[in-house]
Length: 179
Image (tube, rainbow, N blue to C red; front, top):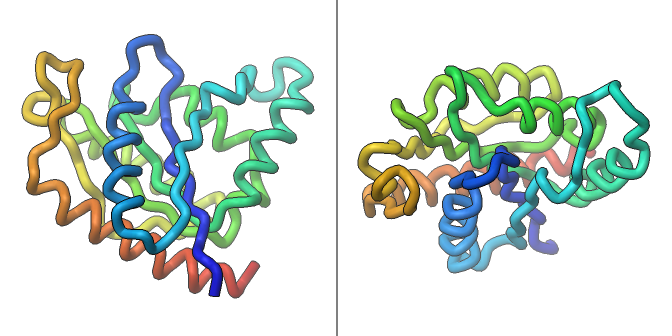
């Protein structure tokens, strides 16, 4: 059986965002496992305008094509105002069928580990027919980021990252049969 393709979705487009650091860390751990093809998928690169405000056929087609080629996802989610970013919600709304019957893990960060954003994302993923997995690495802005800008995760997170990846792969493989 060929390896599954898992996209690590960076959930922010803001200047000075921290998601690229977290995403690269997750990818490094994932790549060392050698059990799937992992890639960073940066929503900022797709330049999606606000959904429904302008013709975005080209951007939406590129976004949906990228998602269609993935078997599962790991969302890097930062908490803004107790929820996910507007850019991530917008990107989620630009696709429908490309999300269906796939699995996702969530790595969140914020003042309380990004837990509230992760819970909001779980509800949205359910509506998109994405099976979110239970293991959820939650990173603290106070202990896992030096001066709030340089990502320095505690070693204890490795257990949760690997547990989450195990679940994402198991569910992604099982759900591939439905697609």
